[in-house]
Amino acid sequence: MSIASEFKEFAMKGNVVDMAVGIIIGAAFGKIVSSLVGDVVMPPLGLLIGGINFSDLAVTLGTDPKGAPVLLKYGAFLQTVFDFLIIAIVIFIMIRGINKLKKPPQRPSMRRRRARKCCSSRFGTLSSNVDIGRCDGSAWRAEPSPDSG
Image 1 (cartoon, rainbow, N blue to C red):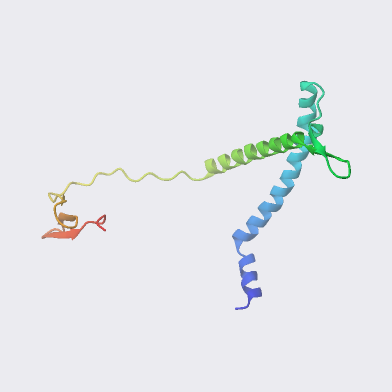
Image 2 (cartoon, rainbow, N blue to C red):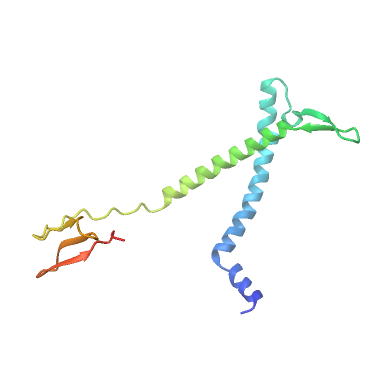
């Protein structure tokens, strides 16, 4: 099988196509959230705080060799943090909704089995743990227990 045909088979699997669509929608959603934060949320917040434009908040660290100021733009960082928080909250709400739509797991049947007169006991004095008392209806067998190495 050639590399091209293997790649085509891989790319056409449902999960890969779904993932690609999710990435494209996620990128578009990220742009929408960035615009929401930068153009809708931050200006009123800055106005409430005292007319601050968050994108302009910066600390001057010095100047570069050309004479331009070197800035630590913490305002832009705060906008990115708000972007992340909004995206995280939306994803959390979406996953929570999807999980509610899933069928709840069925509980195991609570029927009680009638106890047999056979019982098992474990003797730890033997070199390997051995279950004594497994009853197959007519005879007793000694078998190594599942947890013995």
